[in-house]
Image (cartoon, rainbow, N blue to C red):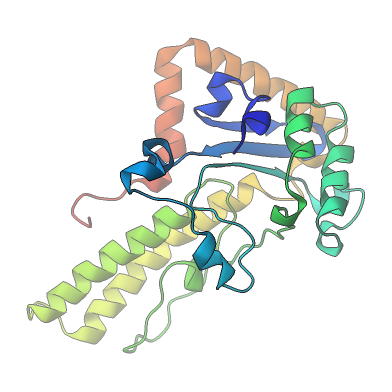
Length: 257
């Protein structure tokens, strides 16, 4: 993070997470990653540059323990001018520049200032809900069983929910409440139910077949969505209800935690 690449960001963007929803199903995120140890200063003995560690770690591209600005742009593969997985560095920056020609100049400036060694393509994939299996002394949690798109932002939360639930069941085994295979079966049955919902809800948000990726109908949907969001933002009760709906999949029963 430098004074130059901070300049295009307004205070609201700098201090929050910004999502951009554009025609053709294009979208973007801007997130400033600012760490307390950088603000405290190296002179206090807290934090500091990990250059020495990085120099001994082949393949590590940059020091992401220091303040930096993260951005990402996404789209359905069929709407991209070229397959991004065949590109790297400067080529990817040129692709994003082409995709965002009509976007705000501040965002385009942020892309222009990006270090090309820190940009990479990512194919978004999802698992499908699976049926229960015969439990054994090996089980699964997190992405090993329910990889999902970032459409609802609940992948990490669901993995943590798995860990909390599995810990509870194993504690019961330790305390003699349940035998091991019964405890793992009960964990898997509950985990498969809530993770399937999270996978499917996340896929809805990033499905290339969705109407948002259509040239004409997508623009109509985008206009309706923006109008609706402005209305919700103006009515506190609706804003609270929308917040509860969007965070529902991230909440864990306190008993599990």
